[in-house]
Amino acid sequence: DLSSNATGAGGMTLLSTQTASSDSTITFASGINSTYKEYVFKYYDVHPSAGAMLAVNFRDGSTAYDATKTSTFFEVYQNEAGSSTSLAYVTDYDLAQSTAVQPIGYVGNENDESLAGTLHLYDPSSTTYVKHFISRTHGYHGSDLALTSYIAGYCNTTAAIDGVQFSMTSGNIDAGTFKMYGV
Image (tube, rainbow, N blue to C red; front, side):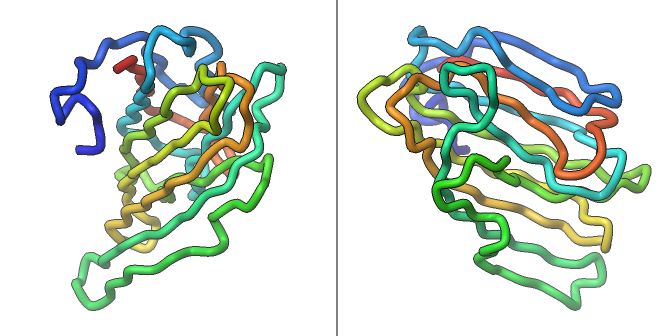
């Protein structure tokens, strides 16, 4: 578990829950402040309208979700037949001083395909340091793969991060539950 709660550093307090229903975005636009040093976002049973990547972006005081990010992305998978596996760094999904959305996990759009995962955002109210984030997402890929994505990065700004927005890289979020916790 990547949560500080696992180390006994603090309990998790549920701050907000949102349920997707054919939404273009799921946005947490309030409640991210200096109350907590860590915010944890959990997402369950996320199902897209089209096979695509779930993505995240951050707001740094303006109205736009376009904080500059630098990140790394690697993934592991195995197919259902057990005949194909991979562990790879994926340069297509890492960012270098980019305001684009950060892909965090692929999911197919067949009826039984979904993804789930966790995103951690550290000390978003700091006006001294960059804001670190990590994510681990597991999805059922449209090619019958069990696919886990690991992302780490930082928002390269000393402005406070006060909003987090999830979206699909193509199409809508047809279903899913998103929760925000303070730690």
